[in-house]
Image 1 (cartoon, rainbow over the protein chains, first blue to last red):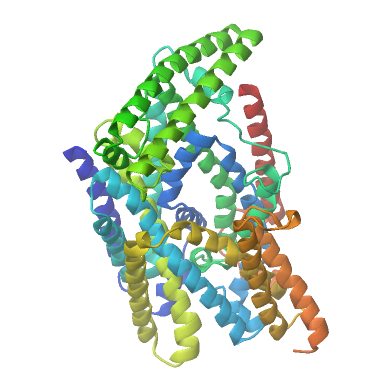
Image 2 (tube, rainbow over the protein chains, first blue to last red):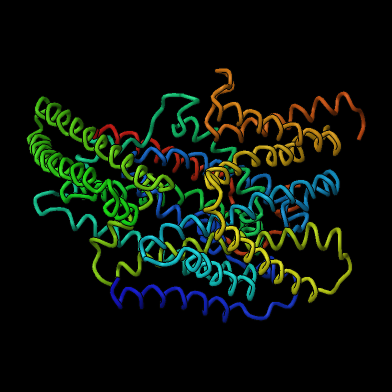
Length: 570
Length: 46
C-alpha cells in the first residue's frame, strides 16, 4: 500500500476513536453508561443495529460468496423485515414497560432468578466466544493481506475498540457506529462504481449483468422447498425468521442498541429502518461481488486468491505442479474470454439459439476452470497440510489491492476495520451490561452506588475485551473452532427464543417447567446436530443448521407444556 | 398493555409513523416488491 493509503486508513480509524471518546466522555450513572441516557433517535438506533450486525466478515465474505456461488445468499435476509415487525409488536413495548437494562432481566419478572441467570450465562458463553471470532476472523485475512503479525492485528483491533467502549459505554458505541457505517457503505459504493468503470470499454454495464446472469450468478430467488438447501425463499422466511427474532429480540448485543431510544416509537422506527434497508444493503454488497466476478472474466484472476499460501507452494517441491496448472488456467481463461465476447454479441443480436450455444460453451469452460482451481487447492494442501484452501474471503480485497487507485485501497481497508470494530464494540458493551446487571448487581453486590456500577461496568468491558483478544490470539490453535462458534448461535438461539416465546404467549407454563424444558430442548438440539454432523440422522431429522432455531424454539414450548401438565402448579 | 406503553410514548415522530399498521404494511410491501423484482430480474438475465 502507498503512503496515502496508510494515511487514509489510520486517519479514518483514529478520527473515529478520538471523536467517540471526546463526544461521550463523563458518564455519571449506570443508566447513562449502559443505556446511553435513553436519548438516541430512531435513525441512530437503525444505524447502530445495522452496524452491529455487519461484521468485517460481512464485507470480506459476502462479495467472495457472490463471486463463487452467486447472489442466492440474499434469501437468508427475507425473514428479517418480518422479524422486525414481530419485535416491534411484542418485545419492544414490554422491555420499555419494565424499564429493563438487559433482555434477561425480563425473564426474572415472568419466571424466576434461575431462568434469568441461565439465559444470561448462555448468552455470555456464546457471545464471549463470538467476540473473539469477530476479531480473529478478519485479522487472519487482514494480517495476510497487509503482511502484519496476526497477534498484532488482533491487538490493534481489540485495543481500539476497548479505548472508546470502556470510555463512553453505549453512547460511544452508538456515536462511532454512525461514522463507521458511513465509511462502510461509502467505501463499498465507491468500490462498486470503480469496478463497473474498470470493465473493458467494449463491455457495457448491461452486458456485464447479462454475463453474470448467463453464468448463473444472479440466482436471487429459489422457490423450491428443500430442507437440505441452506438458502432458498422458504428457509429465508421461516428458519431465518426464527434466527432473526432470536438474535434481535434476545441477544443483548442487539437489544441494547434499541433500548437506547427515547421512546418505544424511536426504537420501533430504528427496527423498521433495519427491516427496510438490510436487504438492499446486502444486495449492493453481493452485486459488487458479482461485478468483481464479471471483471475477472476479462482480466485474468489469480489461480488462488490467498497470495501467502500460494507463495508457500511456489517455494515448495510442488512449485512445478502449480506452474503447470497456472498455464492450463491461463489457456482456459483466454478461451473463456473469447467465448464470453461471443455470448455478449449473441445477446446484443437477440439470437436465442446462438445465446444458448455460447452460454453452454462459457459454462463448460467455467466448469473446467473450477476443476483446475480445485486441483490447485489440493496442491496447496499438499505443500502445507494446515493451509486454509477456501480462498473466497480473499477475493474482494485482492481485487481492491490489485486494481483500485491509491487512497481508495486505504479507504477499503478502513471499511473492513470499521466493520470489525463496530460489531466488536456492541458485543463488549453487551457482555459488560449482562455481567454487571444480571450477575454482579443482581446476585453479588446488590446495594452499591451508581458510580460503583459505572466503574464495574467499565472494568467488565475491559475484561471482556482482553478475553476477546486472548481468544482471538489462540483461536488458530483449535481446529474447526470458527465453524463451531458460527454454529453456536444456531445451537443456542432456538432454546433462548423458546424461553421468551413461552414467557410472552404461554402464561400456563411456569418457571420450573420452562427451566427444565430449556435444558431438555438444548440437549435435543445438540443431539440432532451431532447426528447431522456424523451423517447418521434419519431422513426426517436431516436438516441445515438454520433449522435448529426452529426446532429448539418449538421443543421448549412442547416440553414446557407437557412438564407443566405433568408437574402441576409451579 | 400495548395502549399503556403507547400512552407514555410521547416523543416526536411524524404522524404517519404513528399509524403502526401502515408502517408494518409498508415494510411487508417493500419485502414483497423486492422478492418479485429479484425474481424477475434473475429470470430476465438468466
